[in-house]
Figure: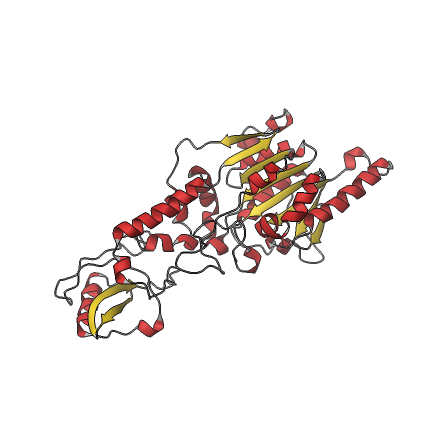
Length: 403
């Protein structure tokens, strides 16, 4: 790090004046807005933002923006081209002597992961190859959040999105945008998260002091897209770093350096289970409550008289055409469960072979629960296969650790 970037050593060194205006229509708890607040404070007012279509488009309510300086809106795929035009115009003005050096502007491309990982990647690659002097800021909320959280190139494995809402979530894997940028050999690439402001501030100061193509890749926990409460944004950002899903690192002069290594690595499950988009990974694990304490244990000991059934793990199921109790044995089972669990609404979904009851799945539906869209067609023998379910969750967790 340069001497300039070493000026921020503790929280008290962070700027006390915030430049970005308040009252924007952004979502409560937006991790991207959190990072942008901190980044803008370091960059200062002499900054022009080239905003590609995305969540941050909501920052501007015509004819106003929350920025102290300039702001330009572009289509999703053309922000680097817009930055090229602005940078060229500024350089021409400086060459003519019409713009003093101390009045020059930092050109910042502001995009989401939809543009950075997908639609705008070719334009970005061309800008890097032209050695364009610009700072590329990507707020990565791992989906097209502005239009309903569809799958993007940044969506992680097994996450549920608007376009991959099945029982296994997204089957693909997140692109490594850090490595893609590093392969172009730019002057600087770094990952940040708003929940770690000191690390973020140091990297922004470092990037500000350099000239050439620079990437700041900010993880942006998204309450609406990831399905968690807005007040948990900071905690989820910290867990992403502590479990290794989001390593804080930087690339410069051909070297990758990890700037913050967790002293204690927490299990990746602690990060995943806080997000509704991964809830389906934990519903099938016997002995574990998918609501994490809200509805008690995930297994009940049922009387043997209830149709001769053994104890089955609770699963969250909703499908209207199965919301009837068909046989007396199932009715007895329902009564037994209600006696043990009066705080939940119960539905039974029998699995019938040759017109007689073989097995039944007990389901609970707490009111206003976000863990309901599990399809009822799953077989009971799949639900009670503890070893298979645990192995599936372990497999997904291992893939996350490798990313």
